[in-house]
Length: 307
View 1 (cartoon, rainbow, N blue to C red):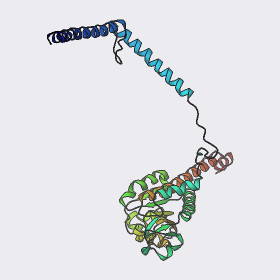
View 2 (view 1 turned 60 degrees about the vertical axis):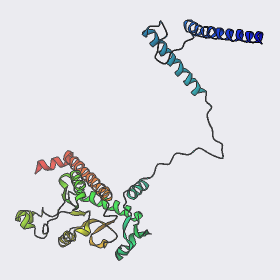
View 3 (view 1 turned 180 degrees about the vertical axis):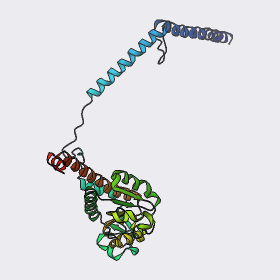
View 4 (view 1 turned 180 degrees about the horizontal axis):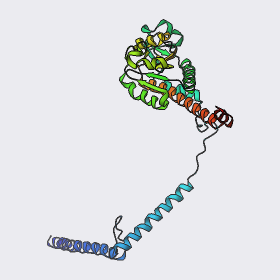
């Protein structure tokens, strides 16, 4: 027993002595590897004994090499060509002016009317149908009517006529004054109608405008005609044609040229009055161009000299 215990004790002592020797060898190998250059620093760091300028140049070269390899990989990627059964999607064709204008009117909410129970009987020809209890306005009729009205405004301004724009809601103020700026001295804008402006003009303007008839507009555009029936009566009494955005709950016969559309939508009102004012601006440009042509004509110049 003593011999066996002595031999076991010798084995334990040998193991205890060997373990620290192994650890020292491992630590020394790590140090040697670092000294030999196997140590790799992180991004932006320098090797031991490397200056910051050398580290910056080395990192720049590594970044350039990485970009070069990435570009090579992108160029070598195979191109995916779909099979004939699944052709690639084609570009959407450019819409025609009619389709674009219809889409714009639809996006502005011009087709939404009032409740179907409130629809005026005279408005029935302009109704496309009913949905969710609301009357839907037929924009296929609104678009040609808007075009004809724009041509009317253009011809009135081209003949040096006066266009009066009336919009009495708070949201109408900015758009009607912007339209007036386009028409310049051929347009006027009213945000608050004063009763008697046309039927009792001598009280407002005096007798001189009455004699020259300079108080009387040639065309009046109403953005909310159902709320300005008194002004429409004055225009009718003075034989002044009127244009108005008429909703489904209003009789379209109250104005001379009704435009069936959603009167409650400010976007619709801005779209319509913008279209009409731009048409008037075109008419003014044509009139001024015609006046310049006549002034530069030598025959007209000779007539003025004889006079």
